[in-house]
Length: 125
Image (cartoon, one colour):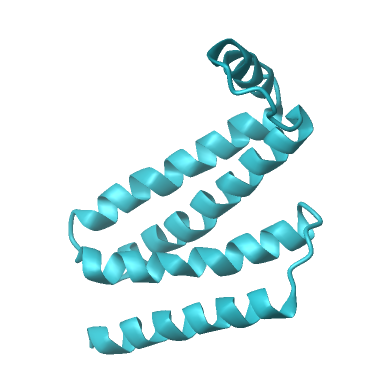
């Protein structure tokens, strides 16, 4: 059980914080306005020079490989709903780390998702 909780923590926290770091890197890189292949390659090359990109990709990798490990012994129908807790981490991280405004309606939606996760956890017993 401890392994499951630890791996779920890695999936939810590391995966989502990795996404937040990648978002920061892309915001530092600037908005993508030209979607031609050559221009996109330039955007990618510039993004690879931002430390947040590498930190984000590394953390997302930890989350992904933790997900693979959990799938080796737990049911997808249980694991995937529990990973919805990443919405909480994403909203908190977006608010504090990226300075995003999260309105009340969005927080209510996140609380409803958390209620769903609680129902999934209760149903496991």
